[in-house]
Image 1 (cartoon, rainbow, N blue to C red):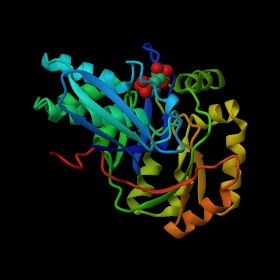
Image 2 (cartoon, rainbow, N blue to C red):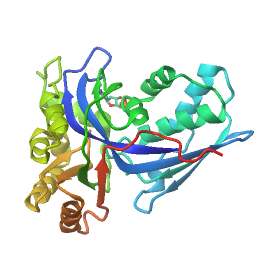
Image 3 (cartoon, rainbow, N blue to C red):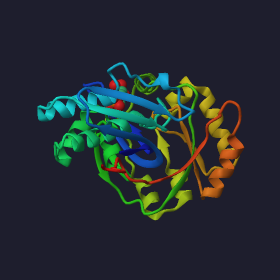
Image 4 (cartoon, protein in one colour):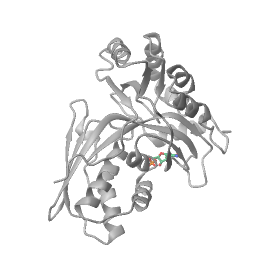
Length: 297
Ligand code: C5P
């Protein structure tokens, strides 16, 4: 299986609900950074990890509480099956970066294990299990570009006819999503119950106009991320002064994304941002497919 990272083109956040989650109106886009996962028959349960050289393998928990363990537990319980399999994860999506890499792994695991166990889970049930695993996991199944509501788990595809070019700048150290949301609550005690809508963003996508999209990009968590990590604001100012149409923190950060006009433009912005503080700079595009089978043997 191969599953993509996501970025949030619009992340409207409302005041926390009674269950502690924040109501969202978000537009997700799947971009071409992927984790791969294979699942093979086994008499036991095992997860092995292989990671790109810019990922610290110790950042990925393999203590039995990886999101892939939880995905396997949920799917096995759903069908009354034993949790058996040999799972290999090859990570290329930066960890704890606001790119939903863990969610990509969970989505890939659900589909891979469904095949391995010949469980024939319905799409509706897979989306339901995905939502239990995390707010972003249903989107990782769907891919493309989608509007997310609820706490982000209710997803529906939206029109996005073009290809968008992004420079993605991960951070050496991650940011905790709950901590960023808590800081949002401190900064905005009067946040509205209904999150800001995504209409302007959706219109820019449908028109496939990069300047309109640049103006419409929106992230309500950015102020909180900047407060916790002032270096992010500096990075975004730098990317924009180097010619990016717009820079933004994605999700709860700390990864920053820069919208560019073309692959060449993206490579030139990436080159200009390259320095010892940012040893990893990725150029990618979206939208791309959600979690999908690459090879079935
Ligand atoms: O759903 P997920 O496990 O990805 O959420 C991680 C954490 O992020 C939650 O425990 C919560 O603190 C915060 N969160 C939130 N509102 C959302 C999504 C996530 O407060 N809509």
